[in-house]
Image 1 (cartoon, rainbow, N blue to C red):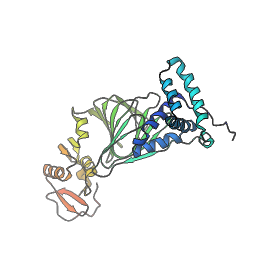
Image 2: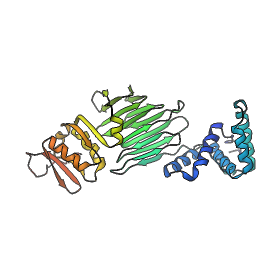
Image 3: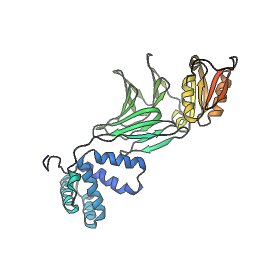
Image 4: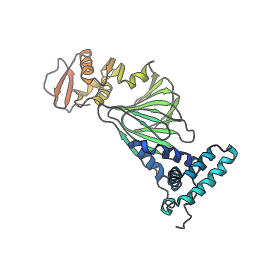
Length: 327
């Protein structure tokens, strides 16, 4: 490969992003550092831009030049940015190996929460991903798109607007696409549920696309027609405070959510019980209390057995069913 095959000056955008990373470097979280590494690996020019900004921070003369650039008229800014980038590259004596690295695909960042704990992650584009308990996602940002795979659990996405890079969440065979909005995607038992708190998203499954607008939810279950409805007024705040508002919700979905908050998971004596409807308001981070309320409402008993609690009708015999319980 010739020495100039991969050479090009960093773009204005790369320089601005690199400057932001360089400014925040001492305070970066582990997640943000992984994002920075992925961004640097995505193109030689980005690695070069970051090196330029780091050297600029160490050189007073170069820092003054950067400050003058910020104050420059818009018409001349692009030209000056290119000239300063070239000048800084020469002054800094950048390593040829950095500039000559071949294009590498953006890295995937895995984020996860344990049972009983939620977490909030601020991404490099200012989007925020909030993971419910026992949730896992894989994040991959590229120049063309921001892709997230929901591997398990439940997450809310507060998406920064970027029309050039749609924000896409893949949950099984369902894809949810947004540009700038706040929405939730949940994998629960055999279903995918989408809730939109602000803006609009497109939901695509098996080639069929639906729009879900602010204040709406969509439930997708295999081999069944999609079901769509309106969210309650306090749905967003309820989610953030670990409340579950159930309105004739199948028991299997209630149990799946409750199991994200307890090490002693709940199982059913018989899979048929999973279709029983549950209504009420339950505090997910108080699993024992919520389970007692559910059992009382459905006239069931909860029998602990090691790391599981089995739900069964009160009139059923106390011995375990021969078939394996469902969760």
